[in-house]
Length: 436
Image (cartoon, rainbow, N blue to C red; front, top):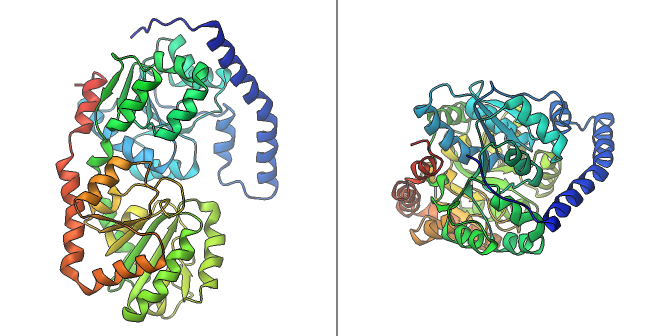
């Protein structure tokens, strides 16, 4: 699909200026990577070389290149990838991420059936290297990451590039409006923008997305499956730590200061329900050690999953389990009686509330849920999601649910019904992209 668009001179200068700033910053990024290497804080050396455009791993030419930021976007893209594979069995797919956690999620979901590569820094030279090696027939960007040079190089090479499950918050729209000379040309170089909700559709429309490009497909995350392998992983995890008979409360994708709030609430919960176990899964692996220190300072009996249970003779006495390993969260939601979804008391916009909903688990979230407002709104309206602002409110709701099993099960089932009632976004996305 050839897109006819001629950038204005001001728009060309904006792209050149943006690229110049990146090249100025690259030496500092390189020095930072060297520091991480020397201090042995380098999580994945492969990530560093690929971010500079070297040692790129791609699938066979002629397939799809799908870019995701991190874990949430990989999970969303998985629904589309599985549907495409049913139509085009064996189509080569290269999936790029910018984070190690996203790479781990991709490996957990796809193993060797999809080729993972870290997305290079967004310069024209690095993006040309990636596109030359992958030679994709189509590029898809999941949700939010619009990189000017990536989109520009696709446009120059007549490679259709689309945004699927496109998200555009009000705050992001205001920011992009301020840099319209850089942002607006990207909109005219896109083949399709598949908006995940009316807010996102309207914001893209206000920013100037062409009417023939913009389509409302709704949110593909609503088609969040409860993966059978997650249930098997949950059973293995519970047996390994001897917690299959515990009342498990999972706090997923937490940020500072949410752990302290949850630990404070848990101290109150165990006064009435001493069998309750709080399982904390921080969003970012670099915080694992800090969160462990916070757990120890709480005075509660805590352990780390990476230590295994060999150092704990009486795991039934453990009150807090810190999961300091990646790729475990969905399996842990399968074990949970109640879930808190992080990034919502901390002002991070809230993470994926549909993961616990898929396992019929009632959901607690803080007031900051602007990343997925439509999802959170319908979950709240149906009685599956409840807002909490502090430790006292968390304690009250958890205690109430633990005292009333029927109310807890009703809230969990409400979330599952939301997923069933809002299916169809994947097919709408495939139709917009010309796969069906």
